Length: 149
Image (tube, rainbow, N blue to C red):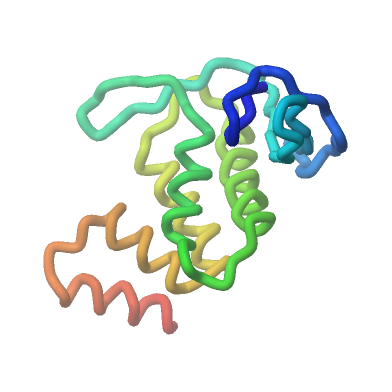
């Protein structure tokens, strides 16, 4: 594993544990060159999953895109890194539980919004504003009103 601080390729595992029901493993590592510590996550890929984009194009499912999307939506919000990882794991597990070889981006977006709605309302609105591409302020306000209900 390459150290994110000094780019050295040698590190040792300091701590390792299963963190979520989906079998992901969190590992704390220490760089053998600079002694910095960093965290990595490992996930088992059970079968290749293809994502069908709006354009009809298919690409391989990338769990890290969900992690990144949730992290961006929750940026500067009172949401911990563990909560973000848990939310991403819940979305990933829901996708896997569908048992399909292909999944539409619209389904993934709705699953992420569902998890964000429970996690943080502002993060939910941030994600929804990008995902649903609100055309005007009225659509944005309608989404906020629906959230209030």
